Length: 333
Image (spheres, rainbow, N blue to C red):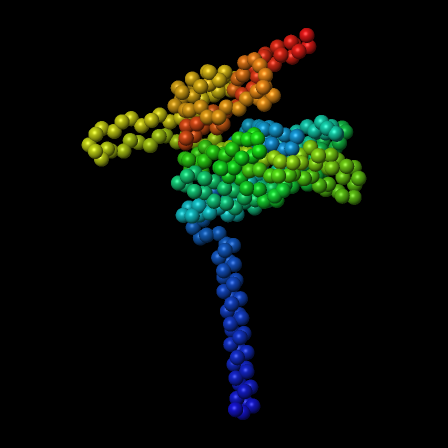
């Protein structure tokens, strides 16, 4: 074999290797584009969570975060065929709270979850959303004004789902499937093992001291719960009987009545009249081991106007206000 033949063979092999390398790179680029780009038939998804609650360390416990007409909007893309959710953003409107120990401060919290991905299963109403949770806590008032902390969670990526619970003790409550679709009622919940507050200005000793104290109030287990009331869906029309018998009337839809302030006995009767069933009943923990006065409904899960697919309504009770006053007066004596 001559030197010219060997050189020609080497150049051909080199050219073939270059073609293979470029071809593999091009194929890899196409695969990345196919994975990252939204599906061609993806449709816009818009949801509005009308109520949000959180359990945050010792600072917030089952506290309502939204006040009408505030909502927590979700904007995303969804593949109608697979239910895959991409390119989403979920924003909880700014809320305020008051820290009392070891420092006294009024603070506002901006809390977001983005970029949101997840999925929806229409057959079961199961919804899952995932995103990096975090935000900014800012102080205002005479004692502390303008101190800022960056808030984050462990794990960093928070998962909220219809099967999730927001806190170890069940408060806020677990999620509820979107049985009537993503436009209907339902709730999602997620939990974290720890929450942190880092100073925005690490060189400022006052800012560092403030955020260290804040972290002591928000650290530990916690979670968030988001509910969408949705639009009431009428019960399906009766289907023709295949046996020749006249079909019976469809069961009435369960529309949760207003139960706040009612005794358990009256709430049970109201649920029965509305075609609903009583689920779990939670009483104040500090009263379970001793005698107490009358208990009334503090909140129902889901809330009034919702149509739970399983017809079950869970209740959280509290002491009637006048009973609390009576117990305090009796204690003073």
